[in-house]
Length: 177
View 1 (cartoon, rainbow, N blue to C red):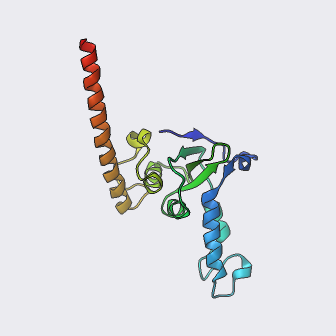
View 2 (view 1 turned 120 degrees about the vertical axis):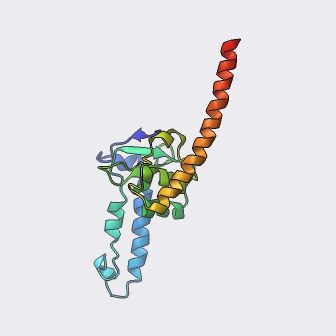
């Protein structure tokens, strides 16, 4: 799996990383709180609305020390979907201006979440990750998203097998010469 190591707990981490997913989730939750009909806008949260901007920010900060590069700059709506539908967030490395997925949880195999986040953000699963996705059942995603992941895995594996078969034939041909 193509990823880089990042110490998210380094005291200087914000010098080179923008926590875009956490900021978007905080902003959207803050807008919801501004419309709070219970008069709790000034409290910073509302129990009745179940609106907690600070918790949404902290829940969407990277936790595991890996970052998975994205091919494209994701829109705000895609970042929201990644944060809302997976155990991942989106961050941007300032020095390279590259966007990455990062896990917001740990302790179990979250390969399905990373695969789903890639499907949402890039339209396909990172090629280097195909063999590492847990497929024995819906482990950390819904059954519907598990089926989506399996369909995308099948599509990409068929392409990969075709490419590898063609390459193998070429290698065999060259060995004969």
